[in-house]
Image 1 (cartoon, helix red, strand yellow):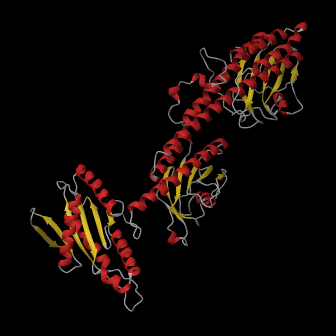
Image 2 (cartoon, helix red, strand yellow):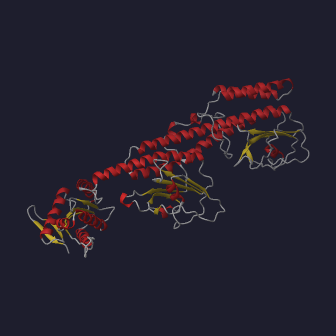
Image 3 (tube, rainbow, N blue to C red):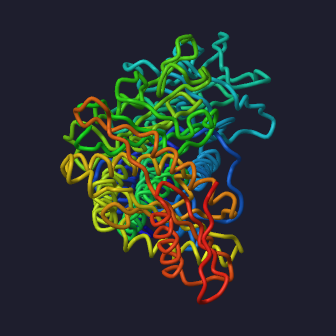
Length: 612
């Protein structure tokens, strides 16, 4: 890096001597060789070619003592500045710092040229705005009396400088401008007599700006001056390119470092909910959006393979996102986000400001916001060739063309890791369910029930609330099996499991298949009255069930229920289940199809009460 800087300085000094004219003109090729050697000694960007230089708007010039150019911005970033995940703001800070460095280097070159080019009035570097066909002033150095219009825009048909847009024009050299040729970059219209300008070219020979020098004196510049500016333009482009390419490379490295960190997190968790949470957190901290949705397809029961796949929105954030919270959909819905799931292909859509037709993201029922200008949906799948994707990340922005190809590729890499982690977590939970759930009813089993009750009891002790335990048994179930067969018996058990589940709070209470025809319910944070009321609802719901046994009358069954209220001062949950079982025994002994509550008044005496 030091060698390259020295060579660039030597090249500048040689060009300065060459501007004196005469025999010193032979120094121009020597200066070119020095500049080339300086370029060859610059640090190389890994991977060779890089993307075009980003277009950065003009910012305040850098001040203070600092290097003119930082080809590797990492030299000026402390480690503690980028340990946490890269955010949009931090990325913008990196670009702004590099832009300030390049501006400082450009201004230093112009200051040096002004001192060695006789009679120079203003020296200006133009660079593109949103495209190569519109330039603005990036940096300038002028006489103290000059009033430069820094907001000027140079297009293909805007005065003398616009001739440099033409491929056949390689320089402008005017020695007598007394003819009214327009120079739009001045406010006060000084009496400019001479002008020399050359285009700045990138590696593909695109015209990405220009260097302009003018003077108040006629015939102030020669062909040698124009040739020297050509070398300077090439050098400035190289410095800019290397600085921005290095920053782009550094940001990409940091982004993939963050991706690696999330990959590590993914493989530390076995929870599907945690996978959703980590996907949301990654996108929120690394990719800008005005609205984000994460869609997930529900797991399909093999017995329901003939039914259409359904899904829901598992995470949402941003503008009008509340309408999508837990929103359900089917694969037949026509939304763009659903389409990405259905096709397992990314969907990108730009919405022009003149468009008055809204394209649904999920379905036609959603609120239509016409302010969004770009949408990008990335499917998340463990297999890119799969027919369907398991998840999809939908991002929307009110800024046109907000999502670059780099951001899309970054999200694609993240989606590959997330898809694998999601399938792995699903398989783990499915295996856990097989070990902890009853295969016939899908309810938790005997062992898992006791683990769940112990966990809930710890929470109940902390918050001082009751837990109601209901033990229930299907009345005369043996005769059902003997009369109609075990397949009908299984249908009855599944039907009663569904009836019980329908009468409790699914996200709060616990229901388990305890044995053959026995079920246990744990009612969390309940009262004595609430416990008996729920037990009665279950009993009555079972009485209403009808089972088709291919006879004239459907089969009806009943259940007997024993209840026990676990108060904060009671700690043995196994005994609680046993107490409920004793009450159940009393209910069956007293005629079945009823609710009996166990009340532990003394260690030896049991009192039972019929439910209403």
